[in-house]
Amino acid sequence: MKVILLQDVKALGKKGDLVEVSDGYARNFILPKKVGIEANGSNMNDLKLQKANEEKVAKEQLDAAKQLAEEMDKMKVCLTIKAGENGRSFGSVTAKEISAALEEQYGKKIDKKKIQLKDAIKNPGSFDVPVKLHTKVTAQLKVEVDAK
Image (cartoon, rainbow, N blue to C red; front, top):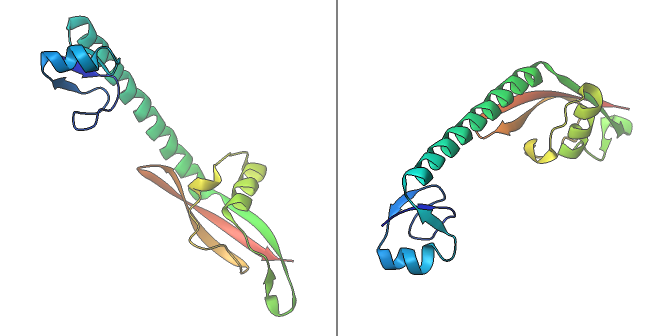
């Protein structure tokens, strides 16, 4: 019997896959537990429409991320940190502070988890910080740190 999976099933397939299983397995496990549905004409058409919609949404998200990456490549975020004598800083600039400054200065809300700092910025200067906007899109944000 051919079945369309509604959830991931270990050793069988992922959600949305069309799989061939024995009639007993389908009748006794997959259908009663609502893990899958029978692959008839109506359900196959619904699956095609759903996959087309998911592809459209994924393409829109990728395009939006590319557009935002182009904008972010032109942006420059300015931050200040406290510094003592000899230019030694107190504290550091973290991804959370960069995210807050980006929202304050440009109105762009970016999750701090998407800002990929290897280490916190502890010295004044100019830094290129990678921001992962999508699995396929990474932007470079310029961060200018001044000492006060």
